[in-house]
Structures are given as C-alpha cells and as structure tokens.
Amino acid sequence: MDKRFEATDAVKGIDPDLVGGDGFSWQATLLAAMVGVGGQAYLDTLFSNATMWLMKAQGYSQKEIYAEIYGYALTPRFALILIIDFCVQMAAGRVAASFAPSKPYLHATVTGLLVTSFVVIMMFGQPQGSVPTWYAVMALCMPMVGGLLGALSWGSRGPLRFRP
Image (tube, rainbow, N blue to C red; front, side, top):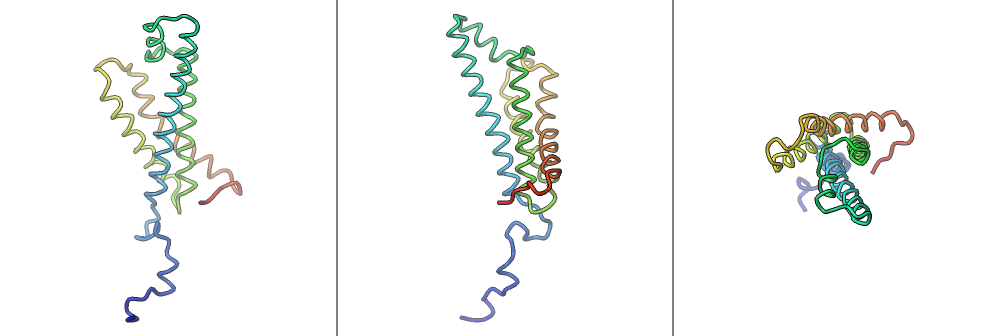
C-alpha cells in the first residue's frame, strides 16, 4: 500500500470528539439531552399514571382525575413533579459535563437549549392561554438552570468524576 495513505501514529491517537480543535462533543450533548427529555417524559408519565390509578381506586370521577393531572394548580403532587423534573435536568447537566472532553459548562448550556426546544414544541401543542405564565417561564428556565447546576455539581465532586 502507498505510504501516503497510511495513518501516522499522531492521527491514530486522535479522539474523534476533539477533531476541529474546539473540544466540543455533540455526542455528549445529545446524550445529555436524551437524559433531560426522556427522563422528564418517562417520570412525568409514570407519576401521572400512578396518580390516575390511585385516584380511580379512591372513587374519583374521570373529570376530577384529569383536572388533577392536567391542571396547573400548585398541589403537593404537582410540586413533587416539578422537583423531580428539576432533578432530571440537573442529571442531564451532570451527564453533559461528565462526558464532555472539555468545557463542561458549554456542554451543559447547549444541552439546556436542546431540552428547552422540546419544552417549546410541547407548549405550542397546548391550546392558547391554557398554560399559566408562571409555569411557562419556569418550564423554559428549568432546563438551563438545572443543567448548569448539574454541571457545577459534577465539577465540585473532584475524584468522583466518571469518564466513559
């Protein structure tokens, strides 16, 4: 084989995430975004179904069940869902930071933007005026704030960091 087409030792050791020299990894960011979107969707669905089963067993009507599940009143159940969602967004930021080859906060920020785009798409599917302003603002800010706090928690863990 012609020597011009053989990989040199310098090229063989290049991490594909670092090609381009900017140290940004779309793989880390997309993996973290999947954690943020998928984790939130899965846990919200699981929690809503459990609420539905419990309320049905207690004799609530279908109308009352849907009002509880799809209402935006700040009940203890809804507050717990918001806390769980925030923890999922922190986990997404932590995944982004831990799998990033460098610049963990940039990766967490881009992950937050990707998850926020999902939130925007979901809000466009709601009838106009059905989502309270306080909830819309919080839902749009939660992925960014949670993701950055997750990245910060990863950075403060020192030797407990994990690498793929």
